[in-house]
Image (cartoon, rainbow, N blue to C red):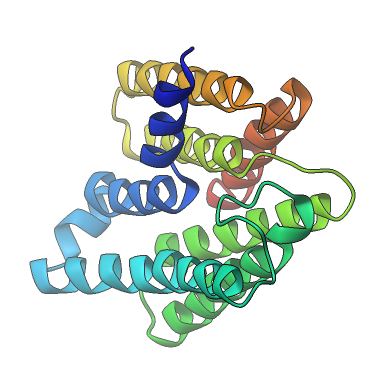
Length: 202
């Protein structure tokens, strides 16, 4: 795969965008949520998740680069990922607490808790070996779709095949950029999928 294509795929399917896609699909495809949430409420929750779990961590990354604490906003070194991962995990945990206090549907609370747990797992692993956040986010998306296929009764086979195909392309792109090894990619995908299924499916 050409490096320019690999870089494009890495940007388009950056974890912050993949995670937002997962949350949006949950709101759209969960029958209870899609029937209960008004358009205003839908946009409120999507924007809340986008600002807290995407914008804030990205601002932290840019500020750390500007202040000289990291050499690249691409977070190529494991040490560069600690603070952004802690920030993202904290935002998800606060989101879980916020949703619980607002008495939003439990499935939304479970999603925030699952995402926080996944981020903590990635953070803990990152202290010993670098793991792919791209693969983890795609694994979480795949796991969420598996849960939705069971809870909604929707036929998700084509969607799951599509996500698996996209994951294959993105993981190939990460290899082409020499960002991760096979083990770091497969491990990340499995961590994301298993934790999402275990917590969302409980």
